[in-house]
Length: 170
Image (cartoon, rainbow, N blue to C red):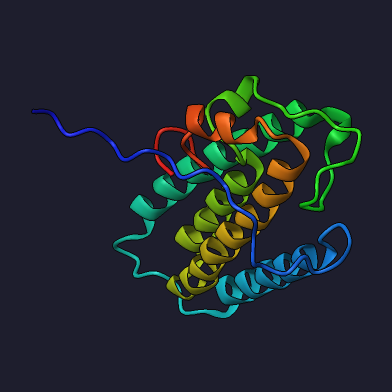
């Protein structure tokens, strides 16, 4: 009998803090992660020269994919685009375009861009990328609790669109 994939777990009320009325604290924390990643890449020990060409290829692919997710996600939100995780009160749930493939393409684009930076700069920059992965997963869970409260059909959307950050992968 073929194995079936586990049923998606619908978003629940979050125990994660709101960090402000619209979630501004989450935005401030992500700026800190970006700064730490930039410093780690700039001042960390570079990758060994033998690996550099391959890492540049992988980094370029990650950067291009991340850029596409960022642009497509932002364009898909249009005037609803905001740096804050709490959705706008008069907004609409986007389920088309890149949002038909992944629920948080902008977060995925940021994570792929941070990974690209680590691959072309320094192994030390993988540490803030890892921190960023945990951070954006927590931010996603906080945001999805708000989305579920604002759009009751959001749970059905998560069943259809199983990936949170990167289409077909994550």
